[in-house]
Image (cartoon, rainbow, N blue to C red):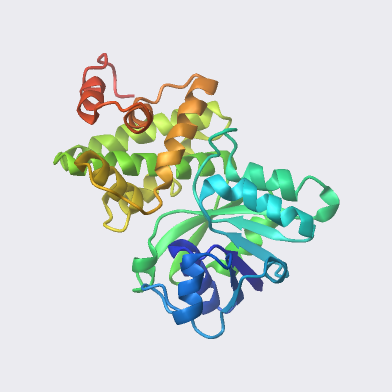
Length: 322
């Protein structure tokens, strides 16, 4: 299968390395002014993975779009801009796979909705969209540590083909059955990662168990309100990804939350920062109460005190757990 990965950050770089290792023909595309691409062009390594010569590096979007499968791994809030760049090329008969987790702040739209808006508006184009989500970090996969992930799509044959083509002893893929729930759960997971980091920074990491339980419950409510299956919150897209996000040293969102409450700078991408704003908007739109996610929004965007937010969560009215 001829595949292009757009985006050469740590996750996009791993995906290209992985798909090449199981026998696919890979091209990695990024803009010429991308520091990550410049490093790959100069050294063919990003410090975690080293690319074999079989992987082609390109800064030409026309060349990149020649593949049948286009994997996208970029910051979620610039996806619409990328789709605007791709549209003039009029891609046809392509499969677009989204390998990032987020919700567009300005519209509340899921990433598959944005991609379909551009690439699937005309049925004659015969383009399809899928998402690839679930737990794991490149640093661990590169050491041969296996994990389980999910591929979901509104187009069943596309989902079937991708799971069959991409599964290996390193990654066991499951067929997703709820695109709404899988996308919302995966995005919201990053907000909970920030909350976990704040608990670490405050020296109260023992609260992570309660955080995971209650956060999963509130994310399930949002998924259901948006028309998805609330059980998805308990699957690989959300609860199943908590170890990699709530505890791992490699989690950018957890590290960002810890740095934030300690007053330290954090310069890497933490998608949960943007997702917190998107979820706040969705809570208002769907009239869903999500005290943990909304508390993180208040801390990040309204300068609320983390201590005050935690106290407010503990002072909420008493109720049954379920």
